[in-house]
Image (tube, rainbow, N blue to C red; front, side):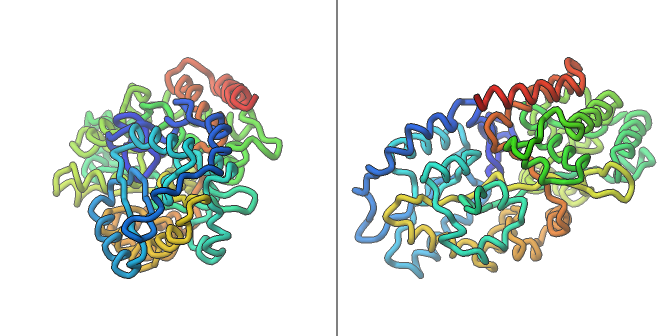
Amino acid sequence: MSTAHPGTPAASVDVHSGKPLSRRGLLRAGIGAAGLATAAPLLTGCDSSGDRVGGKARVRVWTWYTYQSHQWPQLIEEFEHHHPSIKIENRLFGGTNSYLPALQAAVAGGNPPEVFAPHVLALEYGKAGISADLRKELGSDFIADFFDSINQEYADSGKQYAVGWMAQTFGIFYNPQILSAAGVQPPETWDDLLAASKAVKSKTGKLPCILSNNPGTNGIDFFWPLIAQVADDPGYVLKLDRLEGGVQWTDPSVVHALELVDRLVRGGAFQDGVNATQTTQAEQLFYTGRAAMLFMGSWVPQDIQQNASPSFAHSYRVAQTPALKSGGRHWCANQAGAGLAVSETSPNKEAALEFLRFLYQRDRYTGVMNASFGMPSTKAAAERVSDPTLKEMTSWLIAGNGAPHIPFGRGSAGTADPLAALIGGQMSPRKAAEAMQQTVERARR
């Protein structure tokens, strides 16, 4: 999960559609829990001099969710019409390179915006008293409409510190014409993918399945759901992320998942140079017809609508993330890199909560997601997705196949480096697992 694009937490130029820094870039840049230790005490001195504008309660909304750039002004106009005592000030950043420093400065100054994208620090902000408990403020029924795997990323000890804005899942996008020319079907299993990739290369001369791992954290989107597949339990990945319940990165499920990655890479399932392939490059190889398949997330339909030819936009298809065996569970990545939190300390918290209630009203939220080709985070809206490709991908979440893939735990993002070393042939699966455990342990000392 990253972004370049707004629907997921972003990452330096090129991650998921070529716009700014990775969702894990915040942790890599050192803007983490250490910064919160000094930020939290400042909240008691919150500056309220700008709480009102023209006699109205001011609600600042800060995100980088630019895929809804056309919808935000319409939403705000409608909300303000029905709530004349509230003024919404929407600040839409171009990406996390500009967003994260601004948010951190606001938090450190004790004056965070009323509604904001919490990035990967959602739990840390909540524990520090910066983000409100939305389960308490909005009620359990409101929270229950969001997919479980999305709620889990923002929840701790029964409290919910953010809600998903756009969900995401992953699958194998494919070009039916190239697969037909190779005499193969969309892969159901990883063995099928290996066989299909070999046939594509030998019979068509095209690239097989494109996998992007530049930046290296992209690989987590691919690898973590494989752990859920091997363990047949997405909750196991959550325990790994938080390093609780006695689990270790050296456990057999992790090693077996790494062995599968190794077998796929060495067996030619993907293009050469996976670690060097950037997200936008990967997408371009697919929609320009140079590659038969692409492993990527549910923002691809948005990008294809914007960048590919109309004929390609109507011809490509998507298949579920392959299973371990025929008839097996197709565990796939599903969380929401795009989320919304509410400031616990703002005098206008109630106005901010009212804006959230407004945004997630079923018909309104469904309309916004459909208009922007976004994948909804709520079950009610998921039932009404209109784009055929997104409808197919959303059905996998409705079926309960979502698994964690965003590293919220301290040190978890560092597991990307040993994974890249494995992909590059510098580490064995067992050595990579040991390096992951060491990386996480170091981060927690």
